[in-house]
Amino acid sequence: MHIPDGYLSPATCATFYAGCIPFWRVALGRVKKVMHSRQIPLLSLFAAFSFVVMMFNLPLPGGTTGHATGIGLATVVMGPWAAMLAVSVALVVQALFFGDGGVTAIGANCFNMAIAGSLVAYAVYRLLAGRSALGSARRVVAAGLAGYAAINVSALLAAVEFGIQPIFYKDATGAPLYCPYPLSVAIPAMMIGHLTIAGLAELAVTSGVVAFLQRSDLSLLRATAGKFTYAAQALAPAAARPLRALWAGLAALLVLTPLGILAAGSAWGEWMASDYASPAARAQIAAASFNHVAPRSVPQGLERLASVWTAPFARYAPPYIRGAGFGYLLSAMFGAGLIVLVCMMLGRFTRSAARIGPEAT
Amino acid sequence: MSDIHARRRGGFLENTLEGLRLAMERALYAETSASRSGLLQGVDPRVKTAGLLALVISVALAARLWTIAAVLLLAVALALLSAIPLRLVASRAWMGALFFSGMIAAPALFLTPGTSLYGLPITLQGARTAGFLVLRAEAAATLMLLLVYTTPWAHVLKALRIFRVPVVFVVILGMTCRYILVMLETAHEMFESRKSRTVNAMTAAEQRRLAVSGSGVLLGKTMQLSGEVYLAMQARGFRGEVFLLEDFRMKRTDWFALAGFAVAASLFIWAGR
Image (cartoon, rainbow over all chains, first blue to last red; front, side, top):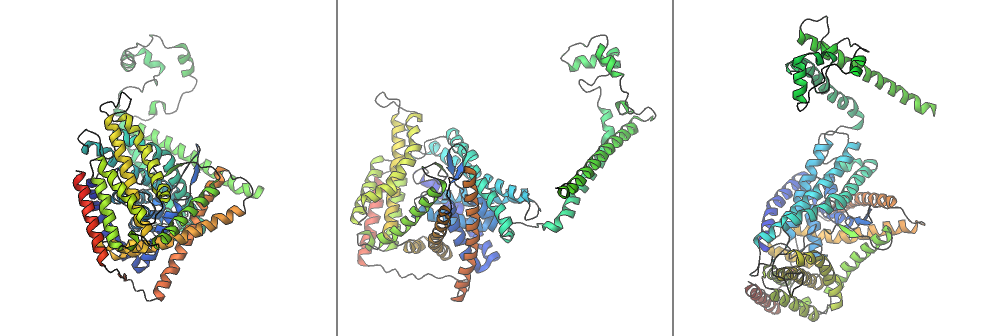
């Protein structure tokens, strides 16, 4: 994804250099505020780390190897602004001294990977990790997906930059002066590799290293965790909060159940034996079945089986309730209560089975 | 694009060790090469950096193939006059640029619409655009190789100050270069020690686990080293402000070199319009 010299026009390169400057300035300012003078060795060493990690080629399915760029990892450990600087430094060093990426394209590469990549990685990580505990599996998944999203957004930006070149820059004979492929070629060509192999490598390394840090040095994940919950304290409130919301949602739905009466007719295929004798119901069946008219007599099998079981709340209208709306609400409360009861019993059963399990072995 | 490589022969450990060794070798060779006597080695790093970057920009601006070829020829001549063997230029710059750009440029020969060339399934416009891509990549890679093989890396970074790059950024870049070598050595030692304890071929899953845990350990070492470096900096009086010892002095020959670069870059930009 490191764009070399010669693929982007000087105007595009200049635009991206200019686009990077405000981000770098803000990043330097924010990092100074947060980390003070400790930032200098930290950023340098993290940039060096990113550079070296890019040399670890991961064997991937299909006989290829891929390496991580470290964008996701840098963001998860240091935050987006410090990661922006560290990855930019790594990209500058790569372009200047190792020929990986062009000098004229440093601005574009930094914008794609360091700036957009870090911001996307941070947004995805915070969104998916939420307030989960630092050592939770959710953070591992969130970090992996953050890395995956970052590298793919970077690749998409690079593809768009490639793709717009032939539109604007051609010589006198009509030959494209820079990258010759239009967006319709550049985007799939870049994205297929990054959505699969390169993205997979980034996902594996980012999530793997975060899982490793959860076991070895949890403090390294604290900087970007936001208002995280400690594992021990997390269980009760974290478990209670979503349950409260679920209970409230369920209550609201129960109150709204009488709205179901407003819907006219039966759902397709849920007809009763008595519907075949009613002209209005037959007309509805025909209208809902592409004008296929239902047989005049009730099908024999349906007639026989329909009488096997008579539900106490048939059609959500208990016979002893006069008001249709109240009958609907009562049916909903009974049904929901029954489901909750079964789930609670199942939960109790599985918990007791889990308690017995280890002792038995 | 460069994130994906075809699997080379040898295992993960061997390939990683080889990659790390090559990177270290390249960095160390650059320091040795910069200390030799040659045309560009004697020029002020600021002049060299500005001049060679101006030539890279002239390559980027050129809309004629012959001007890019002329810059490439000039770069080859400068390499020979600066005691940089062409074999090294070929292996470190040309092969990589040719392989990568060639791979990207080859389909353009057939896909670019235009007039057919000698009845072949390739077009004139396709051939020209492929030529632009490959020649630009070759010329820029050669010019950058000239810069890093004739100038100590610390001087290249200090020279960035002429482009108004903030001092703190230059210091961070300098420390990064220094610690890249340390981290490369650390990673090399980690994988070499693992290789010495590995008696059987590793499965792909084991190799992935090793790469991930290796990255994790290296990250831990990075953070530890960062703390130690910060303490060492504080012990030497660091209070958060950074300074550079800008000890470059322009000689008469440097002014001539500056004029030469300015004339050459202007000429190529004018001719390449």
